[in-house]
Length: 383
Ligand SMILES: *Cc1c(COP(=O)(O)O)cnc(C)c1O
Image 1 (tube, rainbow, N blue to C red):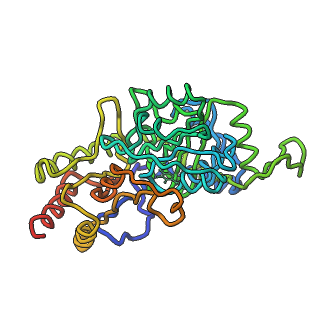
Image 2: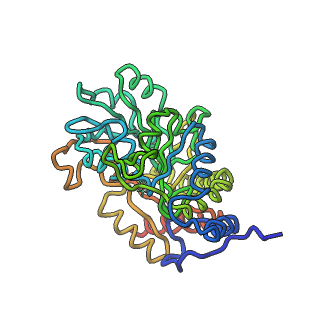
Image 3: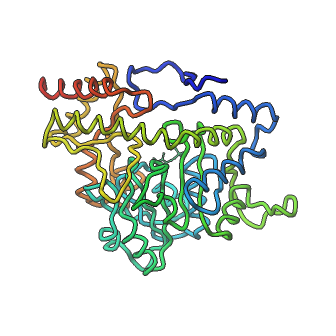
């Protein structure tokens, strides 16, 4: 029998504790070699549809459309939803830039909405205030693995005839009231980048229950080509295909996802209890609302005495201790390409200035976590 040990093929890390580290084991190796040995190394091959079926099954939707990455998945979702000139799309101000970039790429107008302080994502009340007659799509992001409060958002989108797109790039397997995120939107988009909970190196997927939308996304993914007549392109499309090699990794990663989520949750509970023990009310640990099961993609917390300057010092101190960290995102409204969409979103601003992410991956033990927290405390008592 083959040992289920991890094979460390990742390049030698620059840090003792890197921020993220993929867990590539013997199943990943086996399926990848199967794909390689089959000769189907491009975007045809049995692992593509197998991964689409298995992943959509896991989340609980009818269809999956693999893509080259999470950003192209979002682009497909927006183009398939008909977003074009001047259409307004609700996007959180505080998130990775990709969804807002894709709105611009479609010629749409990103409407950048503030966060709910309790769980970092947007809420229905804040979204509602920013709706206009031109709003067509709402993209919610389940930030750092925590679902947004979906019921009121789904209701709002239904009553205003808006398309709900879920960006689940940081929340594979997260639950909202017991049901997986990715099943609430008309389309949901996942990323399988190297630091995500399921990785294919680069990769993404759109999920939907809507057959025409699924077919439209497959057409757009493949040069807008008519699959019945060679070189007939009824629409302008893209090449956003995933390779069979990548899909084989996805199939393997999916098998260990539930176990990985439990491990991440354990590590994050260690972080929360040590941080609370050391910082008391000065710390806001990574949230988990009682209606949510957070998957803690990257453990992210707030320290109330942090500001961008002080955080930079903390980060370089931690780097000198071998610990890689990351600040929370800048609000998108502060980035140069989004100057036209400048807005003051006070919660996003506060989170962005006080938030920091720390190493989160399967190999961490409780004593690793304690060491990392002690280094943070050491900085705080000496600075
Ligand atoms: C990672 C990420 C993406 C983009 O995914 P890529 O595969 O890197 O293109 C999109 N949205 C969010 C919220 C992400 O975290």
